[in-house]
Length: 153
Figure 1 (tube, rainbow, N blue to C red):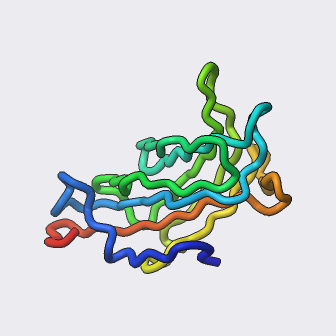
Figure 2: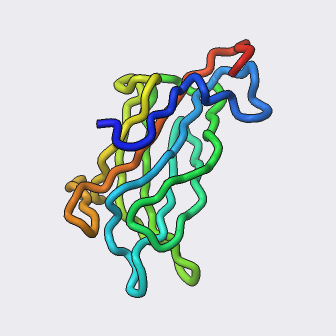
């Protein structure tokens, strides 16, 4: 279930300043079927990635139920290409703390690097998270393992 744009992972180069380093790049491509999270509007989603003891966050998108992210790949230097990634989905708020919407844990060793993956989100209680339209909320990701000393990334 790729769902959406398929990106050849060969086109995802090492992020700037990381050429030749071993590590893992993770790209958050999109999120689909978001729940209504705001009283006056839809949802302002962003995704937090926790991997190998580090946390990275996408920029938030405004007032939507489906969002495409255009962030650069997040590079985790020296990371195990078979590690467990935690994805946390939040609704951005200007005047208060972000609202937690959902979570997923993904074992990178179970994913194919040559394609994108639609990861279904769950609630804090690990129940399926459903969007405003009754469909499962999902985050589309891609990743690439960079071996040390690579020329092209």
